[in-house]
Figure (cartoon, helix red, strand yellow):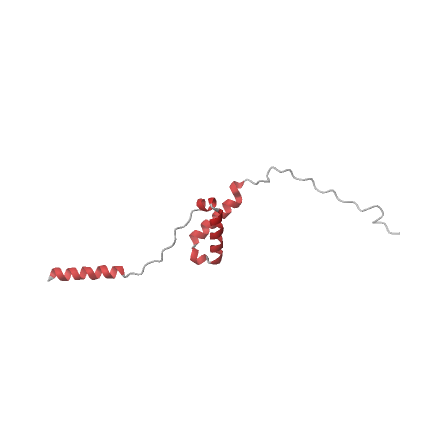
Length: 102
């Protein structure tokens, strides 16, 4: 009788343990490096984060923002860094007689 009671109690405990509230599963967060390498996916995730940040989650949207920053900065080197600076435009002088009144 004790074995039967122990078995039933154990079964009830297992069933009740399985009834606990489960946490919603978050999709795997894509890494910054993978997003930098895949601009189309980055574009899609940026739009999703903009539309529904709460559903996407802070971690994924932060990774998207960091990947966007890295792509924009592209290693910190500007493609225009070695371009010469044009000289300032010379002040145009008014045509002769335009400033004098008769």
